[in-house]
Image (tube, rainbow, N blue to C red; front, top):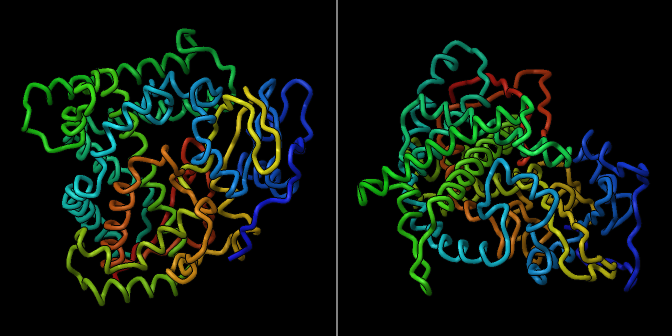
Length: 459
């Protein structure tokens, strides 16, 4: 592991600025290839660098000490409220935890956090393995005949089904498709508004805005109907929405309003579906390129499980599975970028950060920075062995952010991904079609663009 010592930027220095267009700043470069834009900026100009989107100033912070300053040590000074990027997401998402801050965020975070403790999350393990088993059964004709399969579609449908069943007890295929299509439009809107910045509000009847309003209406009608159904039948449902309905603030005794329930449920659904499926797809892709890693995974599974369906209790005995996902999340972190607005003047790594500006942190850039990782683009799960992890700076690795704003659904996503990967490895070997090169697509999460065609082989 590389040296994680503090930056040598002088106290009170003005950080370097990227060359920019007079009117539009760096909007074009950011839209064309945001991953390359941020990586080049950090490697060329250092730990803190200023860039501009039209009239808005942004400071890209990639050093782990700077990330810790923003996410943990002085997190109250860095808010999502009023941020031009986060505000762009609200037409599609409303005001759930993921786009909120301040008193409203603190209240909801405090009463929702107990839902996501290990005990509650583990209750959905059997549902996850049952649905995964059904998917794997459907792969048998492909394995028997040596045919290729677009596993991105198959895994996407699996994780969508798991999150809808876990969150709402929804098993109806038609409703699953309806909500999935509406969520896709929601995602497209978030990307459009965060990249264009000045797109007309939903009230302006552009073709896109009409699609968005229709999608939001679909989500509103379905989620409010599910909330009402749960309210009328207390004790009937054993899902996350039922738990959300039960939560109460210890100080006031109040729960979440119907609007808050709708926004939180919709955001949990969106984040859980996208994060799980993308993490699994990147893991399958990486394993197909590294047969020695795949063999070690098989050895661990065979020694501890054989062909028995995995349970939550098995996971501590399968440390290499966790190491594989840790390394996958290093190379392809779902939360690849996060932006905050600066409330008061601050200093990060000796650089002056003015009030009213924005700070950007990028797990993608920090996770692949040669100052902190040896041969950073190489896939090597051994980086996360107990020996190699010892002494590593906390914020050199933050796929689910950190501090008070750490992702609530992290344990759910990791449990789901680990169980599914184990079950796939027990039955099949996945081989990437020759010549196919997947392309990362940095949307709200870092997804894999298009399909992932693979040959399915029986083990």
